[in-house]
Image 1 (cartoon, one colour):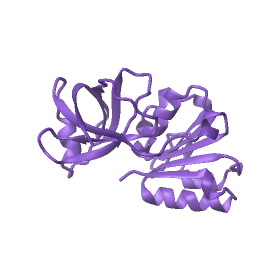
Image 2 (cartoon, rainbow, N blue to C red):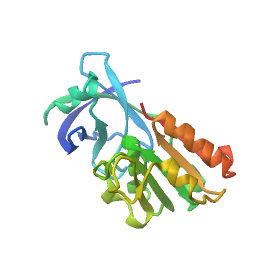
Image 3 (spheres, one colour):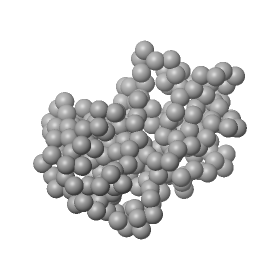
Image 4 (cartoon, rainbow, N blue to C red):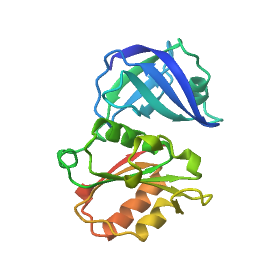
Length: 216
């Protein structure tokens, strides 16, 4: 796939280990939920990141957690405004189906930076009938919270009782009724996705109503 070159507009620090990388858009068209591969110029090294921004924004945002022992995320974090980076994509099929776009009840379940595609969903489709469950360690990791309707957004904090619910998203779901017609989108680490999928299936949701995207 063809690479396009983009200029870094800003690095926005959210917590000591998490930041938003903002690039100029240069006419890139995408569907909310898709990802791109960001690559170091003149090198093959790169990594996949879901698009955090809305289709109506004139820039591209990516929510990135810096892995101290990693090679790519520290490289991105230390780049400066005006630097350039290569972009491949957009790619992927973790997008809303027609039923979701037409008003069917949607449950968005994320852990950590897995909130990225859901942030794009909600900012792009302003009439979405949604509820978000965001699993984090501490409430300050509720990235992009201000973009969600507070009545439809619940933070499950597992390390400290400073969110809306003290415990993991799995704990919350085990205590909660989920209508079988709800379309559930899951994004985050593989353990969370496996556990949540089992819980939802045990509640009677059909496999076609459970859609997943693993974040590594």
